[in-house]
Length: 358
Ligand code: IPM
Ligand code: MG
Image 1 (spheres, rainbow, N blue to C red):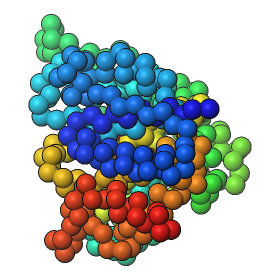
Image 2: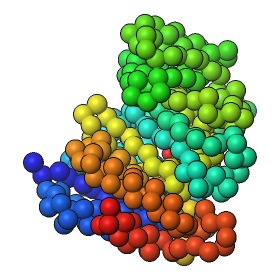
Image 3: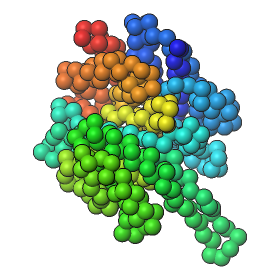
Image 4: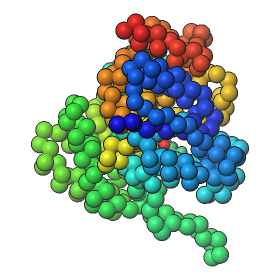
């Protein structure tokens, strides 16, 4: 059956990095005669400028109808003063919620050749290989009620951090099962010392652990995890956390690996439909200069092939090519230590050459 792929380049470097992943995708489609239907649409600030909404309704319906969405990045100072519903980030949140993409997988790993590009000492990060499983459609990001109240003195604002048992169980299940496929360790992160929602989270995860006797479960407080990720990241295998804590911890984890420009992510729902995006943002400061690192986007394409497009072998091919690319000394500007670097638009052709020779 034809697989539908929707490309949403978005804003800033999202435009550049999706060009690179498209080159790879087109190569794979023609090389392996894949039965894929690929469409590209506007999203984020670009969509707001052209169509008056960061996520026009036809984009949302195409997304719902796709097997895999490749999402570049959204946002930029140009749209910072827009109202809440018009902001580019709204596209991301709407897609996550409307497609039920509750499971966000954010791997953080180090290519040992890039250890010197990391801000952390080599001996601490060598061998780094963590998976952060972040809950993506609940918690304080979406909790109701929420408001900014300006007709009372003093003015105030509030959000609601809320999880029900089912939401905790389904994300923890992904955590336990991922740990089972990796090194058998799961660390559940919350603030059970302060928040009821966290205390409840810990109870549920503890209860589930009896079904996973082969997984070693630990619990950690989020502030401690932030510190431990920097001090001793190799203690972790899989981390499972809520939407907000997972957001913060995954940025820390990504930075350990030398560059956030290297790391992909997958956001999945219960029917293996997924949205795939780099961990980095739209980087307006370097947009349009042909210096962005497209590897995170290309590695996101690999995750899409594995989790939503039923082509795990091709996912392996891309990931191996990225490994060889780095081993061969190719460096984009964000990870160069010599000052020499290759441009965004040259990365895909190098990877294709490696795949052809592999
Ligand atoms: C992320 C981003 C988003 C988030 C923003 C852009 C809404 O930081 O995907 O990590 O907070 O989830
Ligand atoms: Mg974030």
